[in-house]
Image 1: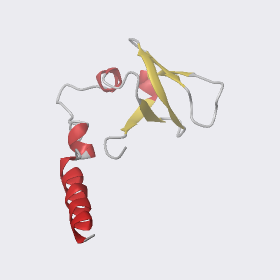
Image 2: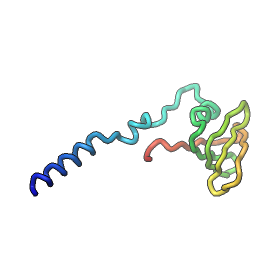
Image 3: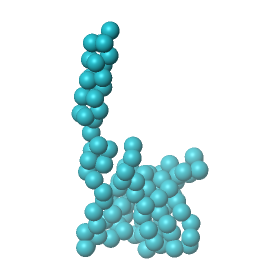
Image 4: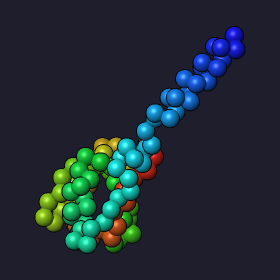
Length: 102
């Protein structure tokens, strides 16, 4: 009986040691380059969920579908199941990106 418990404990510890760190698996924290813009930041996030703080004070959260010269298309808006948004790039104050966690 003791051997089974010891073997189970060793197996559990081995599995925990082999599990990847979530931050390492995602490539670590986001890095800003000196030439980055709102557009280049959003281009890196196509297909991922972001939140946009607009100059009007509104915050929109959704998945970046496409990024054009002056507009970004957000789909699957949070809290608005059947809506998408087209947002002017020059109206964006901040891009909020999830870089840690699941």
